[in-house]
Length: 245
Image 1 (cartoon, rainbow, N blue to C red):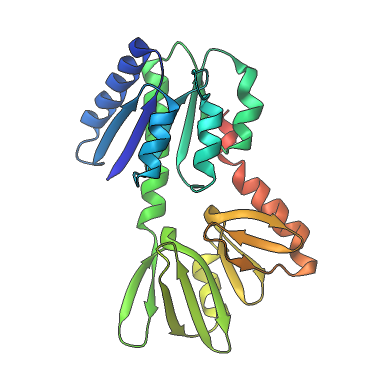
Image 2 (image 1 turned 60 degrees about the horizontal axis):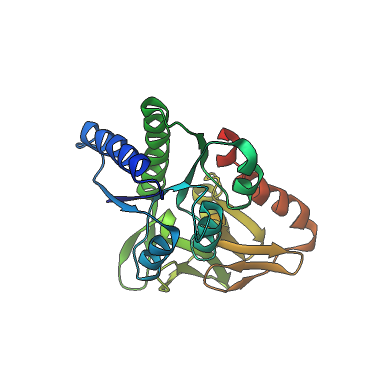
């Protein structure tokens, strides 16, 4: 299922955007299973996410009372770095701020049906494409298909690979890092900051010369000679979606 949230304090515009999303949903009913929720303020949206609802796409009005769309996005990004965020506004004034929260798109009001549907098509295709990719991991007792979007990072100790998943589960498999590199490093989400680690950049919380901290607060080292290139790769990856702004 793909979950979409719409947050706008203007009820007329909220209903208009909802109608466009429902039109997209109806025309893609055999391709995507979409559920759409609406919110009239950012606090209610944040409460929903804190109660465990994860949205794949968030459509946020920038100018709202209580909390702006930028502020809502910043709070969401503290725990979620993979949702697609689409900002709606009548001005380019906040375009720079949208980069800071890794926005997928920045759409000017009045909202045009064709423009929003094109964005939804790109966002949904990207999400599904990432979800469907996986690798087979040979554990001690079975073979397991692991989707790449569920991998936070991988480390190797001697000849044992440890797959740290976003669920908190850790899978163990005999093997070497070189056996994984062809499968993972060809995917733009993954980097190898150290000879013993491969990291999914979707789950990097922060990066510095001291190393990487993942969203689960796990430290990953960075080789000194690789720091500059790894940092630039992460910057390019983070701002890739913002090329549409």
